[in-house]
Amino acid sequence: MNNDYIAIACKTLEIEAQTLRDAMKSIGDEVRRTVEIILACRGKLIITGVGKSGLIGAKMAATFASTGTPSFFLHPTEALHGDLGMIGKEDVVIAISYSGESPELSSILPHIKRFGIPLIGMTRNSLSTLGRYSDEMININVAVEACPLNIAPTSSTTLTLAMGDALAVCLMEARGFKKEDFASFHPGGALGKKLFVKVSDLMRTENLPIVRENTPLKEAILVLSEGRLGTVMLTDDKGKLSGLLSDGDIRRALLGKDFSLETSAFEYATKNPMVINDGSMLASDALVLIENKKIQLLVVTDSGGIIQGALHLHTLVEAGIS
Image (spheres, helix red, strand yellow):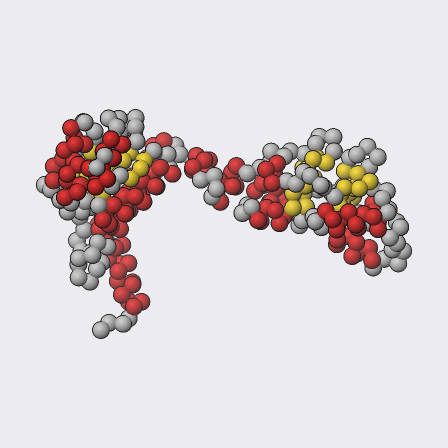
């Protein structure tokens, strides 16, 4: 019994990699024609398949849908029991079957063609039932499966998945699909947060720790503690931000010979702190600013210097901004 699992894994990857290299050599105009069919589609791109092909199809549908091509997966069995009505006359169907003879899939092909819906087949055999019904066919034949018995779908499913990705990328290029578009479909993902979450969405605007700059230090410390931002904001007699007093400022002040809790908070504060006056700034840009300036808190003011809110580094991290 061969227990060299590293060697087995490497051999598996090599077989599947060779499958993809072989496919690169045989790709022809069928890919261009397939992309043109999908681009001309005024409805949705529907993917269907059974078993492993169905699992690959579901992933392909998700990839198409998230990259600008409206798409969903339809199981052939469900289609036979009423869901065939989900396919409209302006849709395009991609049907996947390695053999081209999956009974459940073959059963719905006549109904798809009856409505004149463009059918793209992904199969190894152009003479199979799927091959004959298809308006366009992408060959997914492989020389050998990575399975040592040459039975379990391995190389063939890898090739099918890769071809689906290749089609999705072709469509992205054709449509000029940009990262902003991708983020629109993934608002909760890292990219979506980076491109859409603004400072105003995250900044704290209520119960801010604010005191007048002439407030005695001992009172400012109480407000700082209650404020839970690690900093108290100081304002002048016109209500404009004039300084920030942080825990660190107080610790440094303690080392001074003339330290007194009765001294005004402004005496120990950081004057002219870093602020922004645009709450629409992207939170990701605010994070860059905070990191570059090596600060913990970014104060947001209006154009006149009046405090509107505060954004803490911890808030950005908790929100998943990177």
